Structures are given as structure tokens and as C-alpha cells.
Length: 321
Image 1 (cartoon, one colour):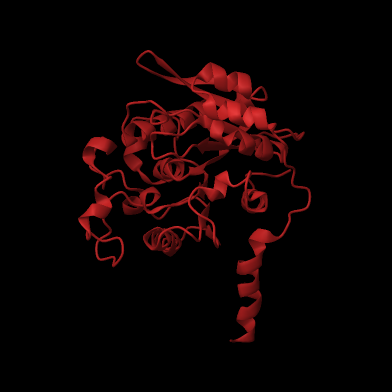
Image 2 (spheres, rainbow, N blue to C red; image 1 turned 120 degrees about the vertical axis):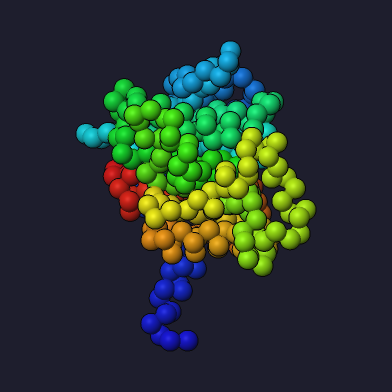
């Protein structure tokens, strides 16, 4: 092996595990974690997350759509960056309270956090397009209220796990979402994409690809127009990558299925070929959901993911404390 490659390989292999001096992590009582998992209403989430202020960012019929704002816990003379987090759960079983730990940890390290309730979590009867539009509305609301919240409207990062990462990536790639968004830009300035799976990358076959092509058809049976609310290809982030993508950090477990791992690499390659400043982190032996859900059973992995995310946020000046 050429000697000039050795330092690079060591960095790629070890950097996620290096501790970051000064990173703060909060402890959450077990009874609170259990209560958050059982909670299903905006009022219950607000009661269990007292550090957050609840706002209504949109109305969907008679339903008020809440978000939960956690201000930075570090003193700053300037407005802070903000991280909008969208839950995973295949657009049917998520909850904004699932990221309570993340909100506490990121805000403790100087990043304001917004947890978004979107249609497609728990018992909502909604399409993927509904979830996209809710994500867009939440981001626009945050920008419109930047002064009130004490955040910088030019330092808005969108992120999430699995289905949540798909929402975040869609906000950065699907131009049609912005067409009816009014005067405020609804695209994020940065991305934190956790637990990437094939469905969080592409919702339609990738022409000519040996693993994510049209065959076998069963691979794409979940991605129906009925479930998505429109042609899945129109709503597929991978099919709408462009030359002005925001910086991003992508995280994935090594125990994902081969097609999932291939999809993550394909997304990373396609984005960087378009000039995007993207990082890709693979964690060997970790299954789907572990990039955000491992705090209880593999805390060193969870902390490593947070520390790597904080380094990304600092490097791109979303986080300056």
C-alpha cells in the first residue's frame, strides 16, 4: 500500500470513535423514556419535554401541527444554528418525542433543536407527500420566526432517521416543494441523514443499476403511488440531485442489507460527483435504526454519532460555540 494513503485510511477508520473534548450528554430517567414511548398527543409530549416550547406551525383541517423548540443551552452573542429533526418509522410509527435525548444533547452543545410532528407518524392517515409538505411548512415557519427563536435563518439544518432522513433530503432536492412556499425559502442549509436505507434514498428504480434497478419488481412494491400520493419517482430524492446541494453528513450501520448499503454509497457518490461537500460514516455491525436508537444498548455508538455530527456542524459553521 502506498505510504501516502495510510494516514487517510486511519482517519476514515478511526475518526468516528475519537472523543470530542467538551461534548455534553444528558441523562434521562428510565420512567421518562417509557412515558415518551407511550405518549401520542401533542400535550403529552409537551408535558414530558419541559425544556421545549411548543408552537403550532400549520393547521391541517382541524388538526394543529406542533413543533417543539429547544433553545441552545450555551450563551452566545449571536443567533444560533438550528437542527430540525424528523422521526423515522416508515411514515407510520414515529413520534417527535423519539428524539428527546438528541434534542437535549445537541442543545447542551450549543445547537438549537426543533422536533417536528408531521403527518405520517402514529395513527395519521397520510401519504409521503403529506409528510414532505409538513416538513417544508415546519422549516418555513422556523425561518419566519427566526428572530423570535433567536436562531440564524441561514443556519438551518434538517435531519432525521430512515423516513425522517428522506424528508430532510427531499427538502433539499425536490424543487416543486418550494414552488408554493411563498417568499420564505424552505430548503435546508445543511443535512444530517441517519440510518439511511434504500427507501430513504430512492423511491423508484435507478436505471441501469445492478442492485437498485427495476428488477426484482417486488423490491419496489412498497413504493406505490397510493402510499406516496404522487408518482414515486417524482418524490424520489436520488432522482432529483442537483448541482447546488447543501453540505451533509450521512450515517449508516454496516448490518443493513446489501442493497441498502449499496444505495447509501450510490447516493454519496452521486452527490459528491455533483460537487457536494458530503461525509459518509459507516458503523460496522450496527443494524438499521442504531444511528439514532442505540443510546440504551450501545451508548458508545450513539455518542460517537453525536460527536461526529457536532464536528460536521462546527466545520460548516452551523455551530460556532
